[in-house]
Image (cartoon, rainbow, N blue to C red; front, side, top):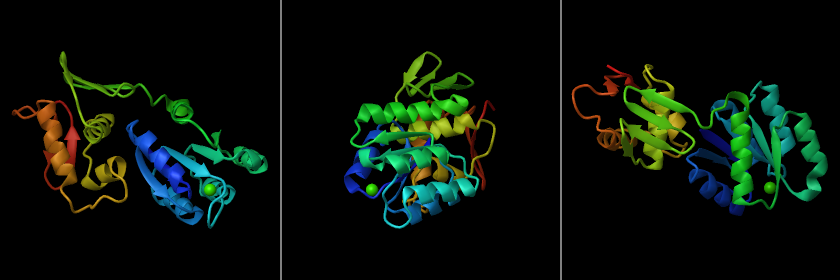
Length: 223
Ligand code: CA
C-alpha cells in the first residue's frame, strides 16, 4: 500500500511517517502543493493525505487539479479547526474523509484503514501460493504450519508478488510499489531483500515459488 503525504509542517510529516511506516505502508512525501499535485499525477497511490494550507497550490487547488485529471485515489484531508469552509469544499470536491489537527496515532490509523477498506476490502486479505500463505491485516506469513517472521520490506515485497501471482513483475514495478522515490535504483536493494525473503520462506530448493525471470523480473507461482 502506497501513500502520498502532501504536508509542509515537518513535525506532522515525521509523525505521519513514523506512524504509517510502522503499519507497513510505503510513503512518498511532498512538502508543497505543486510537488504534491505533480506526484499524484505521475505515480500511482492507494491513498493521498492532503493538508489544506500549503506553500504553492493549496489543498483545495491540489484536489481540484487531480480530480480534474481523473485521478480517483482516495483523499484524506488534514485540517485545523478554523478551516471549516475549505474542508467542506474539499469534501464536495470528492475528498473521502478528514482529520482535524491535532490527531492521535489511533485516529490516524483507524481513518486510513477505514478509507482503504471502502472500495475493495483491501485490508485483511489472505493470499496463498502453494503452501505459502499471507494475511495482510495481521501481517502474518505461514509456510505450511510454520510461522515466518519477515521484516517490513520483506513482507511488502512478498505481498506485492502474491497480489500479482503468476505475473512477471519488473524491477521498476517492484521499486515503484514497494520502495519510495528516494531509493537508489542502481542499488541491489531488491536483490538483497529477495535473497533474505527466499531464505526465510525456505524457497531455496529446485521447486521455487519465487522465480527469477531472466532479463524481466520476478514472479511467484507454483512451478
Ligand atoms: Ca500546512
